[in-house]
Figure 1 (tube, rainbow, N blue to C red):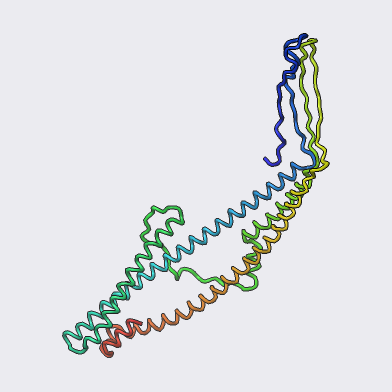
Figure 2 (figure 1 turned 180 degrees about the vertical axis):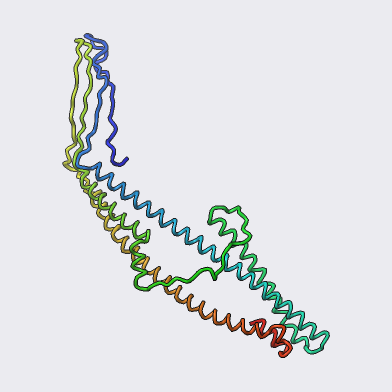
Amino acid sequence: QAGLDPNPLVALTWDELGDKQGRSGVNTLPLVTQELVMGRKLKLSRAAAEREVEQASWGVMAERYAMLSEIRTAYFDVLALQERVRLLCEIRGYGRDATKTVRSLRDEAKQLADIDVLPVEAELLRYEADVESTQAEKAAAYKRLAALVGVNRMTIAKVAGHFGDYSLPDYDAESTPLYVLSVHPEIQQAQWGVEKAKFVVQRAKAEPIPNVSVNGGYVRQNQNRSDDYTLGVSASIPLWNKNQGNIRATEAELCAAMQEVGRVENDLTDRVATALREFAAARKRAEKYQAVVDKAEEAQTIATEDQRRNLSPLMVLELQRS
């Protein structure tokens, strides 16, 4: 639409009605006026509009990737909560077995006192509370994930996947920021904003060039019963209003668009650096946690039924807790 010519103007006029020589007067039926846009203004308007469309398309792309990122985050939150519930239920089972064991040792074998049993019972209550709170958190996470994918009424019983199915990627601290700055939708959107602003400035500078209006029509003079024609050409003369204010405003908008590119680059660089730092720290923690898990599994192996006879009951409980 930005590059289309103005619509023609059609007028019907009846002049000199009631004249003694011809009461129907002078009729111009019709008078057609067409404005001719000069100075490449239509071409510049079209170019600016095309850049705006491209800018909006990159904005949609940025929103799409943001939504995908939010969905992935919600998915892994749910996956983590599922795994946490499973582990807590397993730990709760250990706690119930431990409580049953220490109560038996207190009541039947008379090997333990109440001071030895009460901490185990208190720990079982903590396990129960952890399971209940995590299950409630998991239910809320299911609803959030369903809402993000657009099916908020869907009931999610379980999500597929396991953390072991996903390998951690390697990111280079030098090349990754450069790659992000070259392809990220936000930087593309800002750069297209600069291109659009450049054409808007050119369009504002072309605005003072006057458009030409051409008109023509058929005239019926009823006084002397003659058929005539009318032609006319008109154009404004830019003596005082040369669009100075709009030109300065568009030039300021161009400067702002160029500054926006720099702002987005700085923002993306900061976000990438923060993400890389957090990812590296999380990866280190994951590696350390894996070593802890290995030690805990070794301790759990020691606490199996075949080896419990050589350990004190409290030692077995401590190994289970670890």
